[in-house]
Length: 346
Length: 255
Image 1 (cartoon, rainbow over the protein chains, first blue to last red):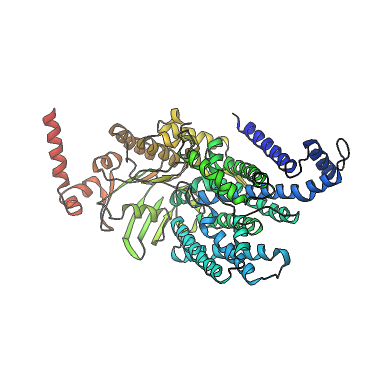
Image 2 (image 1 turned 135 degrees about the vertical axis):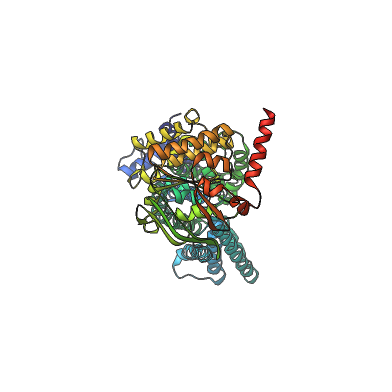
């Protein structure tokens, strides 16, 4: 199947998932009404009869910003996964490997445990982002002090060590702030609930920027999957490429974690699905992962909303429950394009 | 073309190479031999500016440390002893990556006709054109070796550094490779340095030898000076020539 055709089908699936996510919920709104509201709001003209103002409010104020946030977050996390897997030369790497989520959780725990409110409703995301990025920055700085070339193994090991350290601090805070524990656990599980337009408005430029960076560095990432020396000997400016790419991946994950909590697996397995469909070249894997990640996150969030209605399941649980078995199937299936590890030579 | 002047290098504060110097002109080949751990690979890494080193490496009179990575890659290509392969690229995609430094750029590299032609020519040179759409995971060790050799060729450098290029290759292809390398040096004016364990193959590949022992130059010169007399005995701690002659006698007995 031609590459363009596959992308058209994927884009169509994304639009269908978006409409489904907006239509389905505690109140079902028929797709024609969804179209009507969207056309009216976006282009200034309505289709069909004038929609019910309550339905309009549900679509425009509740479901659409939430669905868009889910899509953009999924897309951003997936691209971040592509970046980390290629830069760290490890098909199982993700930004979480570098301690983004643990660091962000330390920030969030502080806000919750101490009842901080410097930035109003954005206090938690701001602290989460700051601590998440600070952890990555510290881990990478420490790695570069230990190893001037910032080798992948050094980064992974320091990232893990910093993550464990951060987890230790969180456990300590849990021990001292038992009443707030519930809030913290809920935040860590990740959710798109109660998000207004300001959330996708913050997430969109960040996701777009990381997508652009990943496209510009697509060839560099291709070469880096073969090992750092191979890439350097072929002309890749490793230090620059690594710093730009890791920063981009860490920022998008940090923003996502701080706005929506920890949502795992999307960044890990979406790139593998994309490789299965489009081969290994990052020029295709990056945009394909963005679309797939966005679509998958939308559907997971839809499931999180409706599966146990009126209760809502944490979306992080849904992505992991569906993602883990699918990932295992994908990893061990014997069709071409499966992720594999091999060494040429010694 | 390539001047290596007083190069010393090592890892984690331990020097592996000590004060290595040699010069190669365009079209010359050099076989680097020596026992395990004598610094052969480290020499290639330093000469390609992949690790920090003391001394000087000049390519066309320019210090290699003053060149950007892409400029260096236009001058020097390297075939490594081993490569991690994490994802299933096709043969053609892998060889095309050799064009990275030479691709035209508008925000990101773009594949031009010249790049396609160079990749296909390189694939043809190593007889891998028929498998151009195969995934790397489906290839044998020898085929992989040829793919990465083609990637090195597609880079169209002035200098090629090969670390154990005959790894995994069957005997006929080893011999063919040695001939190919000589032809590329003579015909295309490439300067080729080959680190080789197989001294027989090294003799087929080059007439100039650099023998390393414990990170120092033991001999630099033609085969006669490098391999003759007691020289190799002191380097390898065994009678290499005697072993070769005994092998030959066995072959003569086989008939």
